Amino acid sequence: MKKLTALALTLAMSLSLLAGCTTNETTPTPTPATAESSLGEAVSYIRAMYKDKAGKVLRDFDVTSVVKIGEFSYDIEWTTDATEENVKIGDPADNKVAIDINENPGEEDLVFTLTATLKAGDKSESTSFEFYVPGTPAKSGGPAFVEAPEVGGTYKYALTQAELGKVLYFDGTMNGSYLATTEDPTKAVDVTIEEAEGGVYLSFEGSEGKQYIDIHVNDEGKVRVRLTAEPGVVFTWNEECKVFTANVDGADRYLGTYNTYNTISPSEIKYIAGDNASKVGISQFPCGFGTVAYVFNAAEGQPAAGTYKFALEQAELGKTLFFDGTMNGSYLATTENAGAAADVTIEEVEGGFRFSFVGAEGKQYIDIHVNDEGKTRVRLTAEPTATFVWNEECGVFTANVGDADNYLGTYNTYNTISPSAIKYIAGDNLSKIGVSQFPCFFGTAAPAM
Image 1 (cartoon, helix red, strand yellow):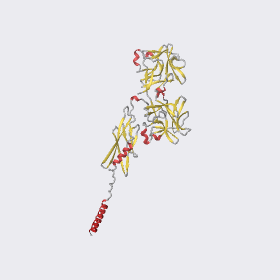
Image 2 (spheres, one colour):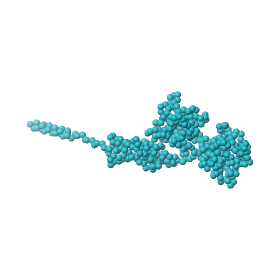
Image 3 (tube, one colour):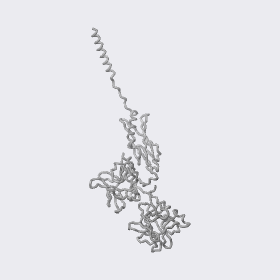
Image 4 (cartoon, helix red, strand yellow):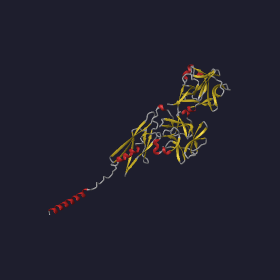
């Protein structure tokens, strides 16, 4: 009887325990997601979106104005620590905000922070990204690229190869299947943007005469660049990427380089457009059009026999003018482009010196003579008559022609070179040199620093 009673009690207790276990095994009710609780996730999403895009930038770019996490959307307020003249934040449009940067900050880097702030109710969270636009130190030199090259304009065709730390100029030749480049702007060709039906051609004068830069599909089915005597593809301006493109083999293509290459080849525009715009100047280096200013370094004292640039500083015009190897009427023609200047050689002859160069008509001499009208003039000739000697007082070469010692230069606001009597810059007139009288000197040219 006691055994039965004990068994009954044990069974009752077991059932009671089982009943208790069933009651305690309830599943917790999850807390519903809210805009406030998902705010941190939204900020993390923005952080992941832009953390790898921060750093160096060279052009205007867009950032998103809204982010969605699950069922919640968050408007993003973008702010910056930069002044409005350096960084301007646009109004939201089409779920984007335009960031307009100062692309030419000067010698110092433009460093700025963009901060994204998201709000939900009374709660807000932010995340920041640091960017910089590299400055152009005075020591670097290089071309002044134009943002919108003019049709009919002539420029240097060049790129900044950041991976190599060099400015590379198209030199008018090929390097295998690619356009060749040079670091010396005086050896770069001048590329002209010619108007064409539906766009433009890119042409230049090279060793083989007038040629065009062309993109084509070669015999192996590969898209390549080439030089041709006949116009090829028509280029059109891509406003977003600031480059000319040609549609070849079903894709718009621009010319430039990438990685550590120092040649110019075609690439599809997709590599620098849209989300890839931030790669321009960092890993993708499209060609641009620009001009180069030069500093003329006149030789000190009497220059030795050798080859130089023949140039003058025209203070009235604020320009350095180089003899270009041609005539402009009765005067020597000049150019502001040292790359287009003639290389003039000082040759020692009996009684003094003569000045020669190799031009379109072969070897010629710069000569001063009396013309048929009895006027003292300059000319280019294969058979010179004047002999130049050094004038120590004025620091110029002179030739005695027409009963006067004459030097070559210009005055007033003229941009051509002609002979003048030495009296205009000698004696009491020495102070006029570089002020109202601009004699030519021999020297070297280098890109302005």
